[in-house]
Image 1 (tube, one colour):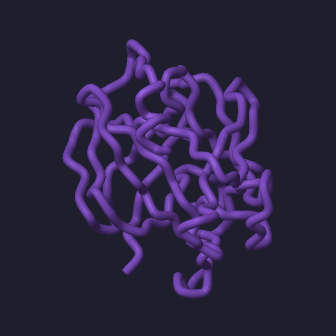
Image 2 (spheres, rainbow, N blue to C red):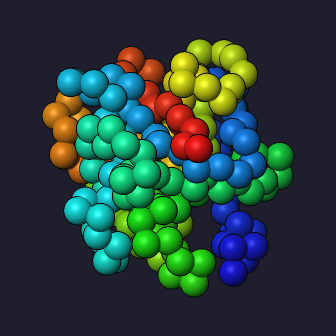
Length: 182
């Protein structure tokens, strides 16, 4: 089914997008908003809930990664016509049959992120030129919904739903980092 979905995806990058980055093909990550007030807030499935349409919020990271599976994500990669596409699967109650994907239903400015059984595909755009490295101090990225000019955007306050907004080169709430979880 994934192959069928990828065949129907047309990728158009915004004209002001920088060089496209490549993450490792496999891995578990915490995905941080690097400019939220009060520190780095991570993708978090609200209340560890895996029901469809549960909100994904930007939440302070659990100090013990093993205790925060709802804050850990598998980044999966596919390539279509030389463009790397990514989807994110929550490790909370992970099940290969009923995967919990990071989804932006009907993407439009202001639409919130939720978990769902169907992925939204994203491209990663480096904010500064460089090579992704697997370490704590890695590159900042904008995460852009494929075939749009919409980027994942945190809010200044924690516990608010992550939304998509028009890609804005000066909006630091659209900066994200991928930190590997061992």
